Amino acid sequence: MKDGREDGRKNAEKILRGAQAARLRFLFAALFTAALFCFLCGLASALLFRNVGGRVAAAALFCLFAGLSGWAGYFLCIYAAIRKNADSYAFAVTESASFECFGPFLAMDVRFFEGGNLREGRSRFVFSARDAEAWQGVPLLIAYLPAGKGESPGRKRGGKRGKPDVQENALVVILGSDPCENFSRKAEKSEKGGQNRLP
Image (cartoon, rainbow, N blue to C red; front, side, top):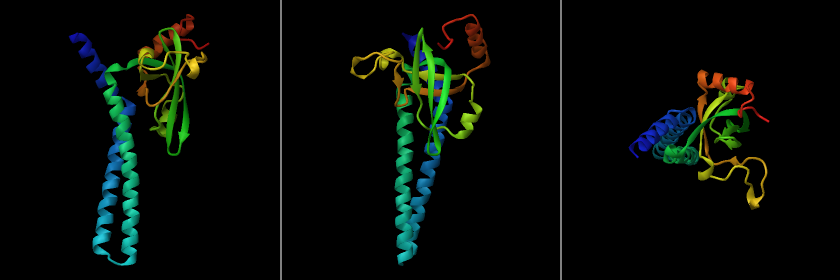
């Protein structure tokens, strides 16, 4: 029991040191700081400039404060969900990864094996174009919720069976590029016709 708790704590630490958790912390801190700056500037405009221009500037800054605060809260909620479930995640190396653009951010769609089953997953859109360049064609280490804690592999809505389930809502967490030894082991498996080769 104690070993299980220690393993869960180590896994949680590994996830919270990963690329996605670090990016979420950075985005929250940056947006919260910008929101606080806008609030203080708006307050100063409202107190120091009592003409129409000052009121308009204060209103615009308060609206910007509200928008930035909303985004900061959104990223904080994603981070809190990852932290809450950190000891329940399992780890895998991606078979493939592709990016989707959402404004200035990118979401990542990945395919990986859980045992002998090929699964698909999606990360939240918190990455940038620089990440896409650095991780292009590189196996990535991810954390995911096992099938028993989410949908069953191959199960679609309505009870129909189809392609492996697509996990959403931050159930896949990107930790970063896979260590060289795992990549080498995976390449050897593929050459020998192991399970890690895509169909």
